[in-house]
Length: 144
Image 1 (cartoon, rainbow, N blue to C red):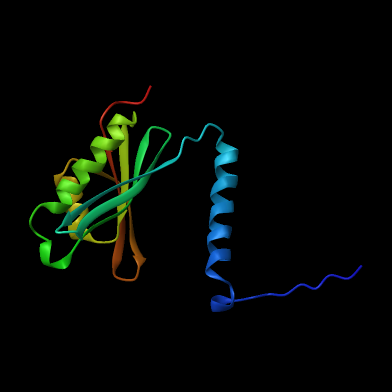
Image 2 (tube, rainbow, N blue to C red):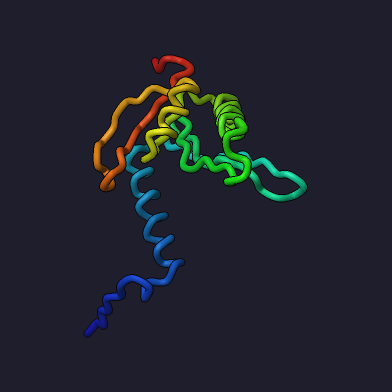
């Protein structure tokens, strides 16, 4: 029996297959950790039906993982980022989370998170040339 193997690269790999690879890695990892309770989490702010700010992530193992927090360019500097953060944190607290984790490459964004109660637990200088990767944690309740 002969098989026909074919390597595909870059754009030749369909987007659906890229997502499938990602999903299977995540599924495998969760099977290894046992007891994963991962659930997507999101908040969004609209003005007259138009999205102007939002945050998305997941909750898992009593932790909020913030993947993205965004505010439209014209609405930045008005406190909406902090409002989004408080909204998603409130949802996570209702789900039983005891802390929250977020990462950023921007020093000024890391400073904003610190102002909002997060503590830098690690940073990698030149993670991307010219940028530091900041990992920040906010603890609401100590873990047992």
